[in-house]
Every structure is written in structure tokens, then in C-alpha cells.
Image 1 (cartoon, rainbow, N blue to C red):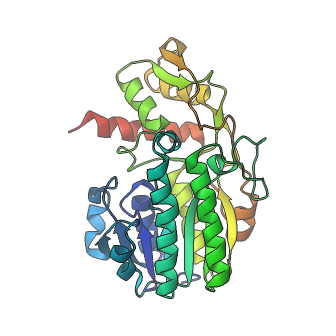
Image 2 (cartoon, rainbow, N blue to C red):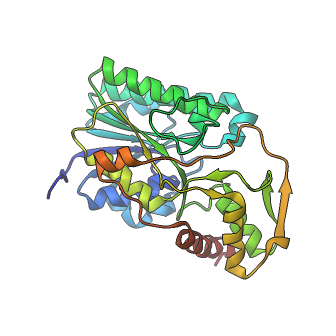
Image 3 (cartoon, rainbow, N blue to C red):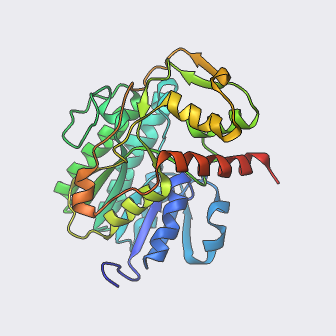
Length: 318
């Protein structure tokens, strides 16, 4: 079985969400027993309906410590994905962002320590946490977040480090690039908006002049990296970027979506830059390659094609 460990229980917070619902089948395939903790505020059980008999489920909110504490009993590893994940919404509602991402993460760490969880994998972020830095960023880049969301993830990483040292817990913080892929139709990110606008042949809205860049990673590549971190028994108190190492501008991304229906740039609409968003970002993932053997497989051209087909099918309805 290699480094697969049968019957070890993994608790996935936010397991019915976008990343979680893609990760759970990967963990089951690797021989783990999976328990999901989710408040179902955004996640959807339908994403994992075919695995219903293989999953334990606890419905609770990570901001309510007493309600989640028992879910950590008998757990070997926690993958903490539940989060307030929007930069823009964190600016409009920073208190809710704080409650979910800082208080919620503290509760998850405390419940893990109380229940002798041996390992926690924390979902962090690269661009929003580091802010406007010259890319490619890496684990040594100085964090200077420019949004409450970025600040909350930096605070989460700090608490992870503190709990790792204070409570003899192995903690790995994974800084995600911009994730896209299946089970994301409930989200409001740029892939979803561009797909809907192309379907309706409406102008694709770009905030700024289109030159801002992001590192877009397919959720299947990301979940492969998360699973490698769960498997890696030797990792302790590490920070790793899970990214592609390639940047794509918003204008380039928009054109990839326009190409799905043979539309041209007359369908672009430019608006003012939004507060809190970084200008340029992509990450060096060489540390994850070295320590985990992580290597993304899906390029942005194929990824956009598949994402558009998936989202168009979901938005079109039955």
C-alpha cells in the first residue's frame, strides 16, 4: 500500500464545499476513513451523494466551539478547509471574515489539540496573504496582506505555528493558488462569472485594465497536493505553495472564455479596480515539489475549456 494508511480517520472541515467535495473522493481512494464537518451554508451534499454511505457527517459551525468539539474525537488528521473565502466580501464584511477565518481556525486548532489530533493541514493562500510583491512569490516572501481576507489567513498560519510548537502537533499550511474546477457552481469567482457572461453573450466584466495576473490551479491538481500532504508523515510545521508557477492575466483569461463561443474582445467591459485585490501574483511551488513530489498536470487552456463545459452544463439546468 506504500504510504497509504488504511482506516486512519481524516476530518475535513468544509467537506461539502468546492475543494472539500473534490478532496473527499481522493482521500477515500487512498484508504482513509473520512468524516466531514460542515455547516452547509455554502457547500452542497449533492456533490458527494454517491459517497454518502462511506462518509461520516457532522453538521456544525466552526465559529461555535462547543458544537464542533466532539467531531474531532478519534481523528488522526484534520484538513481545515472551511473558510470565508472572498477578498471582496472580506472588505465589505471584515468582522464576518474574522469570525470564520481567525476565531473559526482557533476553534479547530483547540478542538484538535484537546482530542490529540496528530496532524492538521491548513488551507491558506498565497497572493492575498503576501499582497503586492514582485512574483513569483515563495515561502520566504514577506507577508503584507492588503485585504482582511489575506490578514485572516496570515493570522491562521501564525496560530497553526503556535499550536504545532505548543501542543506537539504536526501542522502543514498549504498556500493555495486561485482554484477552479468542478463543484464550484455555487461560488461567485471569475471563472463562474465569465462562464455565465459567455453563455449569455454578455460583456465580460474586468476590474482594471486586464493586466493583473493570477496563478490558476485546477482543483484536481490541488487536491492531489493536499492528499500528498496528508500522506507525508515526516512533514512538521511547514508552509508550502500549491500552485502552477505560471501567471495568466485577466485579459488572457477572458479571451480563453470568449474563444469557447468564438466571441471577440468587443465583449469585454472594463471597470475600476476593486479594493483589496493584488495586482500580480503567481507562485514558485518548488518546495512542494521537493517535499511532496507535487506537480500540477492541467494547463490553463485545457482547464478553461473543461471548466466552461462543466459550468455551462450546470447553469443551463436540466
